[in-house]
Length: 333
Image (cartoon, rainbow, N blue to C red; front, top):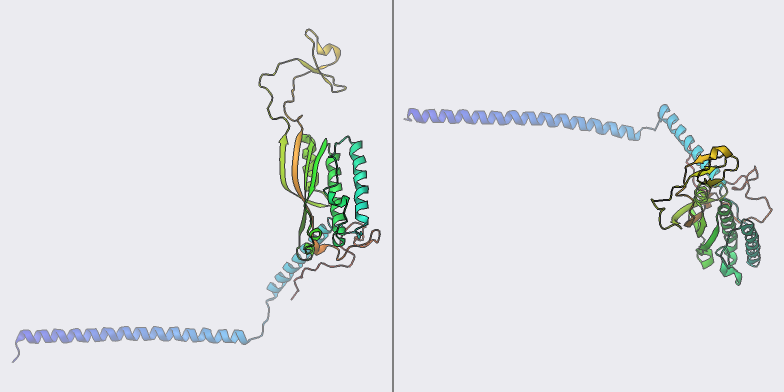
């Protein structure tokens, strides 16, 4: 017969087994319940998704109005950009390879007379950076864009001289793709740049006016890509300037030295103590300026001089009347 201790052990052991099995069953039941709930929710969402995918599309009216307004605003912005760019997009002119050297020579003579009248020094053998065509003919495919570039350089140099330049030191130009027998970049690029390197001497005011006018020009689209400014005065003014009495004539603006013992007021002069130490020096400006064209809004082909093609209804340069840009436009729903 089993002892009391053995009976107690087996009773405790059996009770523990019952608790363990019961706990495992409870957690298994809970897990099955959670799985069933998740599976049911998944099937519900799955059926809803299939229903939405198979149902016809009906756009929300508020979203449709908002989308339509955005598309209209975008189209208006694109059209405004085209209208703005066409003011810079001057049409190309048809010119033969035999005519171009003659045009170049005539423009050199005209510019030389203009510079002489303004007392501006130009470099010897000045050719607008196109000296190669003094003795040779350009490629026929390049003449139209060369004429366009020639006109822009002439216009740019005249602008510089009009702002008070004293000397044109140099004008250099990089050969364009068509001159080298390469593919026309205006057929593949939306913005084509034709750089020219300039060097000239001017004053502080002329330099400031040059920056403002070139950066905001309405005839051509220029970008000042590189700019270097050298002051002809390499050494600053002395700190120990001799202090002399000065007087200014209010009528003529002339500034003069006052003789010792003289009373400026007695002769109608005004005491003048301002001494200009900076700003009278000359500046040597070196710049690389890009002439930009926008083929997307350019004329599809060069136009003969005087044909009137390539002009806007108001008579200004631009894309031909009725021509549309080639860029794809968004379609309204």
